[in-house]
Length: 149
Image 1 (cartoon, rainbow, N blue to C red):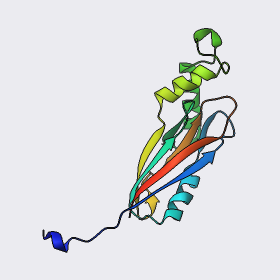
Image 2 (cartoon, rainbow, N blue to C red):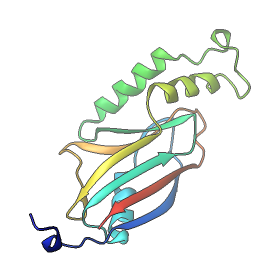
Image 3 (tube, helix red, strand yellow):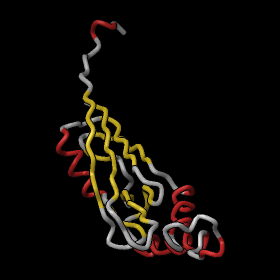
Image 4 (cartoon, rainbow, N blue to C red):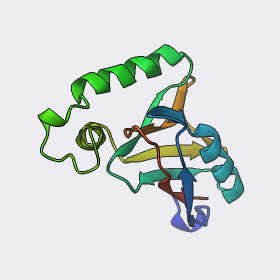
């Protein structure tokens, strides 16, 4: 291949911040919000990185077709980290404090998703979720970063 004949691609780097408050403890789909932001960036091909700036919530890519999947996941994590102050030393903010940190440690605070033709390359039944681990949801800030063209 002749290097001089290679097309010149202009990369775009951009960041944004999105704040979301889940309506309750559990999984809250935010795919639509993320798609709206992607569309406003005019990037057709690239990689989107999402980063949650909190330790008592997390981000997941999960099925968004059957709500039973979401409820079963919530039940599973509740059983793994029960809200019982007799089990933990760190109870400064109540019974859900340390379990929220455990759930956050077992999941993730960042995601990387390819973008092609201006759309997220999620699977047919995949969505992006904020997983709120606290009983009283609070505003959660997500940093969105996209690199592409």
